[in-house]
Image 1 (cartoon, one colour):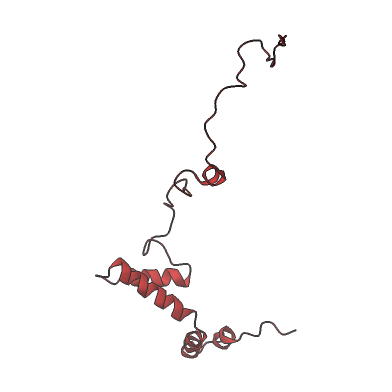
Image 2 (cartoon, one colour):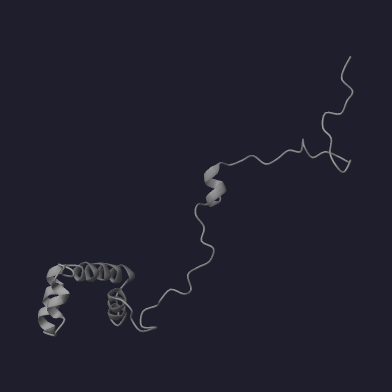
Length: 117
């Protein structure tokens, strides 16, 4: 004889949603990133545009200098920016700048010894 008791009880009494079909789980990556990969909430409208504000770093100075040159394609601008940034990271370039300034802090800018102990 079959068991006539209810298999699932709900409160308040009414239809049970325990056996409702659910959509198939697409996987952990889709749960984190969405269907088309990582999504940005919104574009970065606060990004600094060249020549818009005072430069705050060497990269800003380089971008402003490139923005003043007319007739460069985006690919040429990127190549020029990458080459100039590589040059500014070279220690010999920094030494040349320090030699040309001949100020009280020029030698301290080149030294890599840190504070004396």
